[in-house]
Image (cartoon, rainbow, N blue to C red; front, side, top):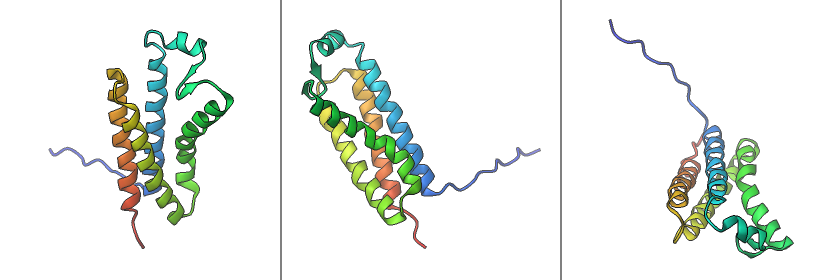
Length: 135
């Protein structure tokens, strides 16, 4: 008796992109959360040290926008017109891969591990968007 074949569905590239942005966001959140356990991190936060220097409204707004974009792309990958969606995914995927590569040197191993995963996810976003099916 042969095992039954499993039925699978073909996912549109939009769903794949949305799922990749979701996975990327989870890695960002875990990296930031685990970063709180690095000795001295919380004290630094209490002393006014932020992710890109001294804490100010401007640095926090910039950081918030930097981190909001991937979250928005979860939804926008499903909503935007195809051409705009494709190019945004390519551009933002390359941008966020570069951001991770620039922030990984000298980091703790947990951050580097998540960073490698984030770079891979970002490059998968670029690859799927680049190979967006044509009519």
